[in-house]
Image 1 (cartoon, rainbow, N blue to C red):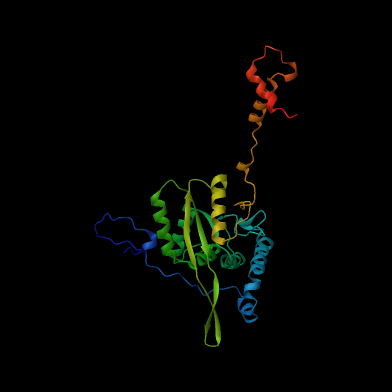
Image 2: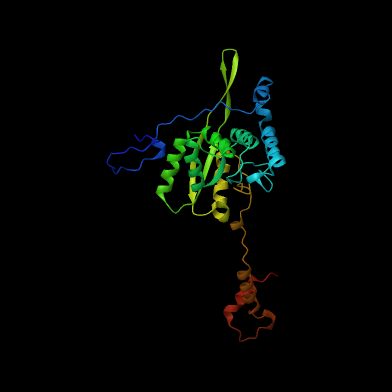
Length: 281
């Protein structure tokens, strides 16, 4: 089974091997112990699940208040459906406030984040050797909540080799928290999961069809499907409404070319008399 390598071996002959799937790499999810500072108090007060959404929104406000919103601009997450729009990641600052916002957000929902593949690969290469820029350390921590950095690097390499022309990648993240009783103590643990949803030749927002398909997928994952994404069976779908202006105009021309029955002469073709039968009394 393929093992991720972190160093080059000299003096060995290069052998052609079948490219392994990253999902065959033996790897245990990284249950990173970091959590927001207020979490323990919320647990003791038994308010964690009730306040998780409010805390996520509070940290989002801090990102706008202290950093101008970063890549959450212009208006941040949708207030009713925070997962509905894939987050377009921009490499730059990744402060603590943003990290904790993602901590709560991935506890509540499956979210999709779009990365430029080559920038993410570069970050991973540096972070594996602890050489990433200080403002990117929190991003490396966020990724380690789900898998070791070496695993991420191998997974991205596999995707890039599948199609060298792809530039963008959407990754799904979900890390629900749960309580684990250890004697009289209550501990917080998580079930992190993450996977590559799809790679794209251009940003997903540049193609309305790709965006709509991704939004529907995220709605299905979160089991919250607005009628705008997937109409209910009681709603009338656009294709059920029989309107076509050009056909309606053609029918108007057809009926206008039929003479008024009152003006018919004795010699008018008898087969046209059928119209008289169809005319209401």
